[in-house]
Length: 605
Image (cartoon, rainbow, N blue to C red; front, side, top):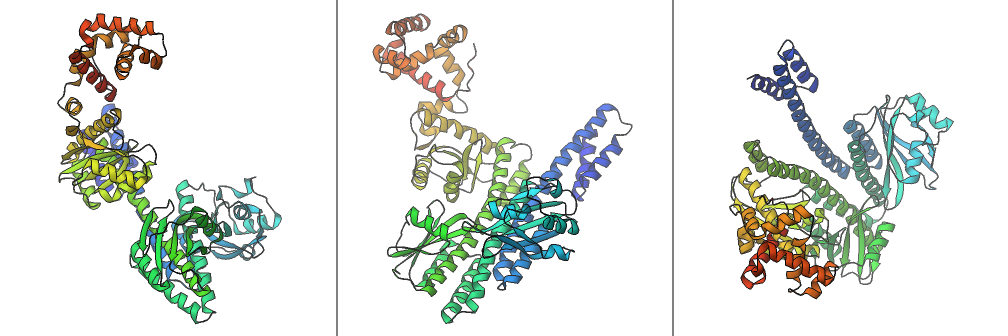
């Protein structure tokens, strides 16, 4: 009863939005004067409540960061004035990281200096007019190396080249902890984005990643705004580029997907458009499908400009130096400067679209992965909560679902999961394997489809349909057994459920007495190996695999033929002289296969 009361009071506080201090204070007050066992119940309940609160805060933080990134990209995409873009970037940094001061420096044309351009929260005129040589101070080092740097105590940090001018300005501003990340276009650093506090502070990896994401958005938007400023000073062809940019940006802001944007670009440039992601997978195609040569994409990435590729043109979609994808323009062997600028502008908008897609996909992948992990590791802890979380993601866990596990040795799990995302209601990585929940799926067809998409054999084990968290978790275990069976049977690149594996499937099913079968068939040999440390089971398997040839078996085992004969004699003494007859041999080979497929099976005497 003490635990029930503790949980009730703590849950009520959680529902009211209490922080960790309030939860701890309540527990400490309630535990005073209680017997040790009841006090321990309060302590355990408080620890659980704190973990729940931490998980809730993390979920809220991720949602807030995603919302902020989307809002930032939307706001920046609307701005046309370069100064307004810079002020918006710096304001967002200060708001999202909760720092005292945020600021941005831009490199000069010579690349020898990075000078203060915009600040927010600064009170020092000297600091606001600061200029840093490349390699000087934290910002100069970031600009020189194109890497983020952070320090909880700037003046005590010997990694940076301290100068009197820089240190005087930083001291007058009162800054202590500083973080800076590079603003890059292609391989060129154009400036540095900073956040700073007037007290010691250690910046977490999440904060570094968030600032870097803002810097990626900022670099694209700065370049975008600068290009737009140039178009206002140009002729009617350049003004047309501005109109096109507005139209494409409006498409992105309305939620248009890649094919719709590609179609709009093709219409504007009066040619065909093919869009590939960074790995070369085609995302959209208007007109003939063309795969750009890797060296042409590399040139476009390095230069940040559209590059001619014979009868086509290639433009890289970049976030800083990172390649997000490539655009290929076909049907236009020659491209006037105005249209080339249009094409490059389309590359910028495409980069913004792909960056937004990746940010959203990353958060969704985390949320879906967490649901999948909770569903398969603790399905009976809170089934109703799992079902509700599934519905928020568009997955009905109360309806019949197939559970499939996909495995490929020649590709990363992330890419395999991405390829599978369009073939299931829920896809994620669990226990180092890609797991899918699908309303209806043919595992063999899915294996063939995924193999084609990723370019290497994909093996798929399946189970179900199953309904509800508990049954889905059980189906996952069965799908895992099926996958191991397919791989052990040499069926890589294929898919099946246990019902499609014949005798092996029956033996691996939930109601099969696998231990009993193995004990009856191989028991004496297993016991002998366990007692003596011998390899009779391995010898049997090799002997059968070699077509019962002594010569081939001794070569595989790397022993003398007499050793093989002696081992076979020992097996005969344990199993009986008829163990090599066709009927017994078939049964033994099946048992050996099952033993290999089910390594965790415990065969007791």
